[in-house]
Amino acid sequence: MANTPANQPASKAPFHLKEPGPSVTQILIATAGTLLIGVLYYVLPDSIRLGPPWLLLVLLALLAIPPAVWVLVRRQRMPYRTARTLAIALLVVLTVALIGSVEQLLRFLPNATAAQLLRPGALLWISNILVFAVWYWETDGGGPGKRHHRGHRAVDFQFPQQADGNTTHWASGFVDYLFLAFCTATAFSPTDTMPLTHRAKLLMMIQSVISLLILGVLIARTVNII
Image (tube, rainbow, N blue to C red; front, top):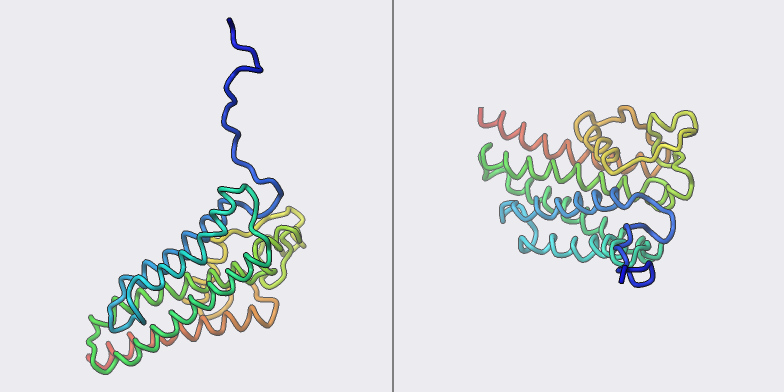
């Protein structure tokens, strides 16, 4: 007997969320960028790193992965208050690890050669970019969820696509904040994206100071040896 629609096996439903919200792809990219910080911290020399090499990676996994798993398994977003608490805790952990490692790098300076400083300095400089990319991603407009519900209008940062009030409904992704963090770490000033609020300006100032410290350590030690 030919199968009827009633007894045909049901095909697997395509992935979709039960309610509208920020892009799942962007959430996964941001999660991957966050975990990469833990990997960079893992390969830092023991003299620069605070605690065991696996500690930060484990903490990041505990704080960053649950929202992404919640989306993929339950097909809905984690409640805002819970997700926001995890995000703030994540940012605190990232910042403490970064600043603590930079402080260790400064302590290591008198007894290190330029070659010994180059690798940890480069790792910390890249970590600085990633850490503040996460800061900007989670801070701008109250986070990706609130940005979505507000129509991605400029709040803390104004991207060029938002200069006209974002009439095209352009949505910023994690790479946009990564580019902002990269420019801040290299140019020490805004480029095409403008900070609009005090907290945005303070974040960019802090990142610029950290980047300047890292680069200053490397340059000063190299010049001193020469």
